[in-house]
Length: 413
Image 1 (cartoon, rainbow, N blue to C red):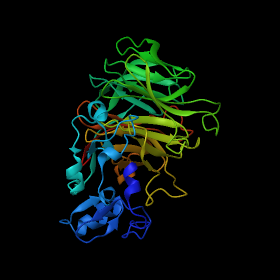
Image 2 (image 1 turned 90 degrees about the vertical axis):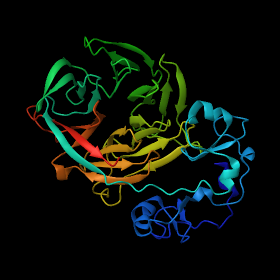
Image 3 (image 1 turned 135 degrees about the horizontal axis):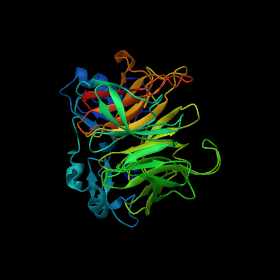
Image 4 (image 1 turned 135 degrees about the vertical axis):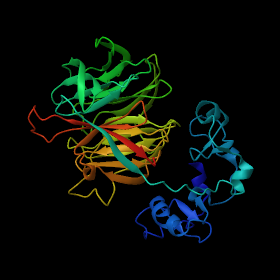
């Protein structure tokens, strides 16, 4: 961002003053002048100094002239506002297209320090099992919930895809298809989009179970995952160039409109380095951030990458140091966003949920093993405000071993 160049050299130390430089600083306490990272602010400082005023480190520096900052998304346009919601400078075109309804700060107020904020303390995050179901599948790799509460679930190992209703403590199969899928998403017309071995996405009619070609085509790329946004856009992760984890070829996130026309590609960061190794799962936030589970190898080890609508990498998350070690690496699988725009990610091998902000910063993790939930893999939001977790069994489990589906009530996120 252009504003970064206005900070004086030597003004900001290398790292957080609380954790002694383990993490980069992001906030400053106005009252005690401590410089700290996001995690220490949440977990340490605000617990011991609840009444102190905190400001984003980006707000410390010389007077900023908005017109001298060029918009990152619209060539030739000067910035005129600061979006407090997205923490970025924007031009007049940005307001209409992306930031309408966001908290916008004018230059005079920005330079008077009115951007200072007092972060909300996270209420206690809690999950409780509401219902438990036994399915007819060995693994639940994919989940999509229909408007009537029925759902589609897929087992990629055994190439099974089922449309089911939930009955007491079991699933009742409506339709069963022998097909292998790599990604699934519900459309706004209540049909199902899936990625298969073909470049063109397939459309499943939820009423008849019929599979047809959709209007969404990744050619020349091979789609891996899919997400439908609240404003009807379709986002796919895709690759080209041989094996999925090859160092050559392309690794891309593509945004399409309802008609299948490509709107945008995300492939490289501002240093022209690959943004992804292999996009495996995708979701988005209400302000347009795209959240990607990015796998680095076929063992499932990876990270979460969050990019802005303009293509900036807002954050990367590689697991929590308390639970993700060399022996227990972060293996993110499915990813969803809650109505309050927090990100939830399954960590299958460690039986965890990781909770992140809408920019990919850690909030906390939640141990599902303590609840008796093992092998959490797929995620979906229900039509009634709960979260579904589809589980997988250990490798080599017989077909007679049935996978569990859990419905969880949650609060604090």
